[in-house]
Image (cartoon, rainbow, N blue to C red; front, side):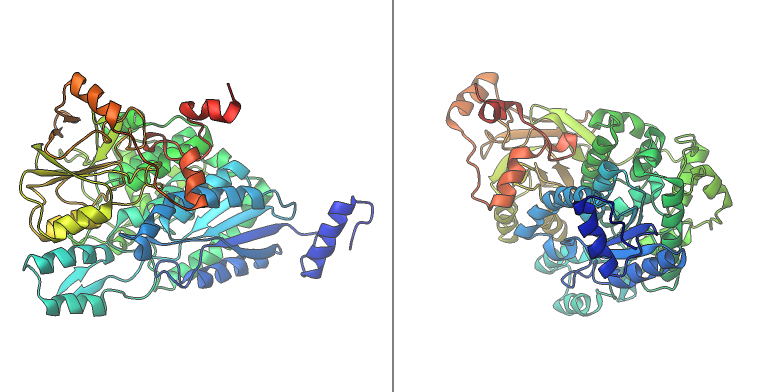
Length: 555
């Protein structure tokens, strides 16, 4: 019944809500989906959301739904639209923050698969600090082609393998016909699933929700249980910031490292940490990394997939190993108010040597942070079979131009492919530079040609690859802008360094004549470029650059 003593604004809100059948005497949970019919990863989310809704209603709560945008790397990777993934992440965070101001919403369940959608929802939920839980749409079934399991991301190497004579057209056609096995996230990529895994490690998702296959009944039950659990969080006022403590964040970082990390997950972790108010940087991650081995290696190359991790106990199995190794203690409280460690001790974990290695193995963690005159604020790389590489620069202003050169076999052994203008500001958008790297693997050049870029790079990349270079092309004092064809570049993974061999005098001379030209992009990316933080800070978008202060505030 309407309360006529309220203000006119509240009165009209109550009038509208009651007209929609919402009982104003009950708490209300919003189920937020990122479903669209243009992405295999996101197309199955509606069914999951409906089960969540059933769980909420079963607890005598109101359940309402609304949608948020999502692109999905399955349709953007290698495309110009890939530049919108990071900007979209922060737009989603803004929208969640705005929706949380609605008086009617007491809790959220976020249903998404795309890693940037989930990261944006995480950021927005931390800002809003309204009880929240996360669940994905599940993992795509892994295809089997010619007796070998093949994941979605391995398809990107196919063109290079075909061009290099290492794959037949018949095999390529089999991949085209059989690779997609229903909807869900890629089964051969930690990166694609990383934000959901981070949410589970933080304690903002039920056990195994980030690794569950999309084609099983288990996901239906997990969705329903998520609906039940969010109502308890609302009753107990368990908010994201009370859960995502410093200990929880450290655990999420350790899980990320234990699963091989990715340049994408690092950028997202930095942005999520920014929203929690906890300090996280390349330096702190590098310090944590010293004692955290990679114990899970998801990739087609290793024949290890997300379903293997799920059958071995999922994220909680990884955390248990980290607790045993002394990396984390697991005593922080999660979504139900109990310590993470309690859940881990009660969860049945099935050993699976295919996916979870011994934490005491001696191999170093593959994530490496590099510094030098080419990366004053740091850069990221992953496991490299070549500890040192010196070569001559071949400079390209975009991923497309580099891909054309590789495809046309204009790249030779000893080259360092420099792909600039792909950073968060210079892109704008910091796209995932993947296709030239995959093509090099297919052409069997990955150990003889290096790739460096201010864009993101895949953690499953093979070869000599350095990404997330900061300062990026657009930075006034960065050296990516002054590199020319023929310059000598040295990369040492042992010394964690990356540098171009130029004298201070030559650098100063070039800077006089080389000026960065902003790309012509639409209004959305223009705004993003003006507010985005550098990659080493997480690319969040409430960042004010020092050089813009005068134009913002005047003299």
